[in-house]
Length: 397
Image 1: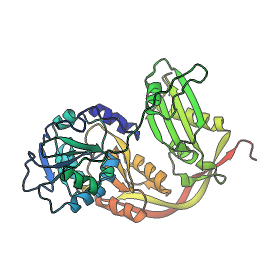
Image 2: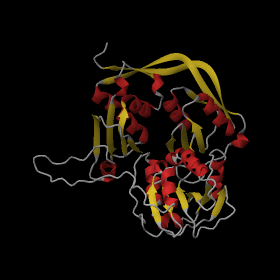
Image 3: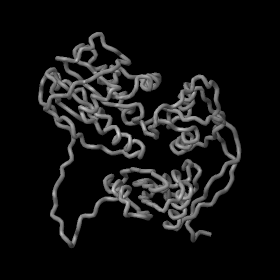
Image 4: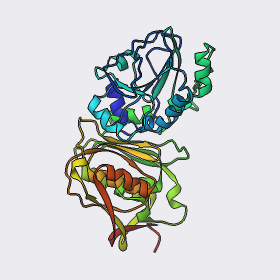
């Protein structure tokens, strides 16, 4: 279970994995709580009371994005002292407590560091919320953002709950004349290519109209970036923000899929260089570098005592709406991601070599500065010469 969640997180894939554990109408497994961490209720008993339990993690952007909505529901039923709202993790208390300094939970935040609860519920994708009635029967399962006050009211009244949106699977008869082709942007298709050791080399770029974005970066062996605009593809490959790419109007908005597999044993930098060259060659494009004076925001350390080094092996970046969750990332990687999302230019002047966990605003400069200050970091604006890129077709003069 934890392995699947970690893989999805590391590959930065936004995908919903079907629950294989208990279903609506089943008796809920026991909620094993090793630590009560925040908003601890006077009555911590779980038996014989209605419970709303949301499974989350500190590294999960969608989980953190859903917290304000979960808080609103908690506030709406604040007078119901019997109803218990739980935000359940399986991480160590120390790691959660560090996040609680920056995430405003109104629900009771708990963890099962032993992992028994997640295992019993067979949690393989988060966030996911369960409504469990007084008899311990599961009455609803779904995304916390799909949970409404109306559903909770019906749940408390013992009324049948409206089922959440479902996907209808229709079996169609295939023919040799028109065989069904798997989608390039389907996770199982991409993951199948990643695992297929018979594929020694693959490079493909194709235009798509499907905005469903997903990506797997397993360089030097594989790289997949699906459903991303040309601007985002170039920004990711060159490690820059789209604001540093000049292109004819409308060119950067076209969506593309990129698939790359190479089992020849080349290094990571060589593989990335090959992808960049092949990508431009396939689309008949060229990137011309030019230097330009511009405003750069330099990151410096103001109070090193506020920095906390990352713990554990899990690493990655996850989107949380206006914020971005960085787990076990070095400063250079953090600034590269912020440059992509904010369109501003950043430069590392911290001389920090360790990896850290951050929860940072990615849409507003003042918000970003405020978040960085809580980690003892500050941004200083300065003018300097930076490298920009002009994108054109190979036929342009």
